[in-house]
Amino acid sequence: MPVQNTDTTVVLTHPHNKETSVTILKYGATVYSWKLNSEEQLWLSTAAKLDGSKPVRGGIPLVFPVFGKNETDELLSKLPQHGLARNSTWEFLGQTKENPPTVQFGLNEKIANPELTALWPRSFQLVLTVELGADYLKTGIEVDNTSNTEALKFNWLFHTYLRIEDIEDTMVSNLAGMHLYDQLIKESFVDKHPVITFHQETDCIYSNVDADRNIQVVSRGKQIHTLKRENLPDAVVWNPWVKKSEGMGDFEPKIGYKNMVCVEPGHVHDFIELAPGKKWNASQLLYKDELKYQAIQ
Ligand code: BG6
Image 1 (cartoon, rainbow, N blue to C red):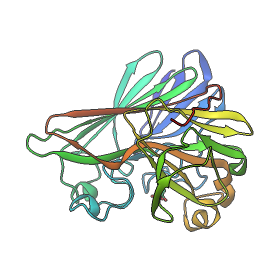
Image 2 (image 1 turned 180 degrees about the vertical axis):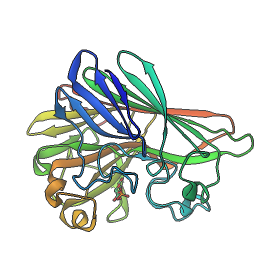
Image 3 (image 1 turned 45 degrees about the vertical axis):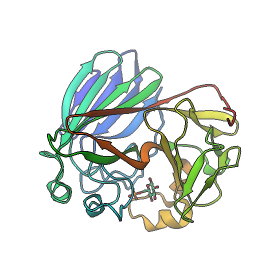
Image 4 (image 1 turned 90 degrees about the horizontal axis):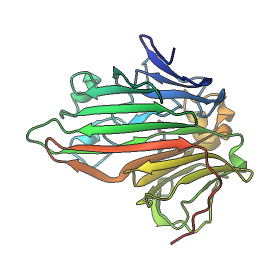
């Protein structure tokens, strides 16, 4: 059965390979497992809540309409960190393609978490498309401003937790020469390092990363994950390391920070302002590729 729809999850299995599958929780429309030839590609905390009591710690939580905790916007500042999409139950809209198996989920202000829409009274329709290729996973988002009068101001981000073997043997490449904002020291600068390596907590927003720059996660000289972005100019790179992991109740095992790195394509450096009736689209493609080091322009 290529698509299994239960009360809480949707599972897609590739028609030519039953060892390749993706599982999406309707709460948050959170992809929380992607297996390629039976190998799990995403990191999921063993203490992640999958019962809708809080956003999932792992997989690909969806960040909308605000990234982080906003302190300046009159309305967005009322929302909790990372907005309302990851803590709302989405509607399963059904299967749109047989092969590659593709499904869609929808969210609007009528079905989103009412405690949060009360804080941010805006009209919107989101459609998430999840496509399971034989050797890739594509997640696409369409944001529709369904208001006739008001502009829709928002951030979008795929908060992708990638599974890795050992953070200290891992590099993230092709962000060299890019402008970044380090959220820990609250400073902006150009990253002069040839690759990103990890020796401590890391929380950086790379902004305006050229669309043709494919971010690669490399372990011991081998590429493990490649990310292609469409209409997502920014990328957050995050690893909580020891202390921050200890402070997160749903982050288990505590040593789990060694086995994950978040590479999060988004539009978060500034806000998208969508005129009434307009739509905005973006996507993230996760796949395997040869190691390609892209020169700094
Ligand atoms: C990252 C942010 O995207 O998400 C970090 O850059 C944040 O600052 C992390 O700590 C996790 O956020 P949360 O709300 O899921 O604990």
